[in-house]
Amino acid sequence: MRSEFAYASPSSLGEALEILKDFGERTCVIAGGTDLMIAIREGELRAELLVDISRIPELRLIREEGNQICIGPLVTHGELASSGLIKKGASVLGRAANSVGSPQIRNMGTIGGNIINASPAADTIPALVVLEAQVTLKKREGERSLPITDFYLGPYKTIIGAQELLTKITFAKLDDTWKSSFIKLARRKALAISRINIAVLAKMDEMRAKEVRVSIGSSTPTPCRMEKAEAVLRGAVPSAAVIEEASRIVAEEMVARSGVRPSTEYKRPAVQGLVKKALQEAFNIGL
Ligand SMILES: Cc1cc2nc3c(=O)[nH]c(=O)nc-3n(C[C@H](O)[C@H](O)[C@H](O)COP(=O)(O)OP(=O)(O)OC[C@H]3O[C@@H](n4cnc5c(N)ncnc54)[C@H](O)[C@@H]3O)c2cc1C
Image (cartoon, rainbow, N blue to C red; front, top):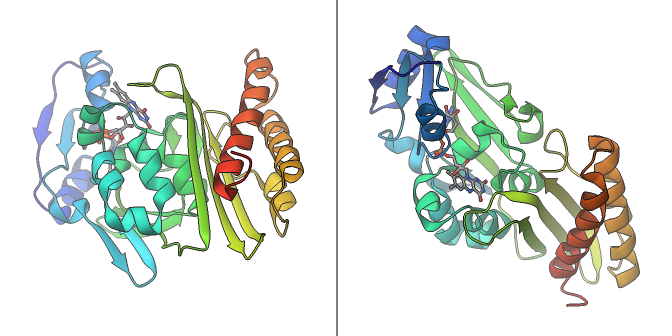
């Protein structure tokens, strides 16, 4: 527990990486501060040096690179939700970002902080999982990129090193053959952390679902896809019966991954019902 620490506010990525190289384990990066300020206020920050990356302009961009969308970690939830590029090429992420907290939290909280904080309830993570996003981690000596599903070790635990910064999130831009849905179940409408959130992407080929991706948050030890249910949906003409079956399989997969807990009695039917709703919305049937 520390109540005092030094503060650095680098204005370039190079400068930030130098500081992380020199001070490593003794630093803590701060972006929007919506998660970190709580830890600081409660005296839980162990770092000696707070590295504020919010003045680094190159980490704040949303841009197209060929058929990829590339997002800087400092992009806020509000910026994601209102971006034309995200609405067109990754609407599932825009909807997830728009569901975060309150307008104040969406104005301050960043996608990078949401990813790194690694809360099981983080709303952008299931959306990034179905987008098959890659995260890029950079340190002074070089960078590495990996699928977001390989980034998590458990709740609030990731593989990021003390000298690394998350510098980029990339995924393929979706065309309009892709349908999507993002649904969140929370205690209250405003300022509510998700109890369950679900992201669905479906690529349609005429009447058939050519490819379907499903991820649920707050429900599995690490972010993942619901592959058994996806296999049932792949190639199928979506019908009430197919959706019912896929939703049941998602709930089973969730229990298999997380184990039976006191919350399972509530969570199994809740997940099943929400997945059904999300699939109906994505396929635009039965609403
Ligand atoms: C009242 C309230 C309501 C909320 N509601 C929701 C909600 O509905 N849904 C939801 O998903 N979240 C919610 N949150 C959580 C929070 O707003 C998000 O997790 C936010 O996106 C974190 O971003 P930040 O920039 O504020 O991160 P910070 O607090 O600055 O940092 C969070 C963590 O990420 C690290 N970090 C940040 N950026 C980088 C980087 N580029 N490289 C390396 N490490 C980095 C920091 O060191 C820290 O460990 C809520 C929070 C509050 C206080």
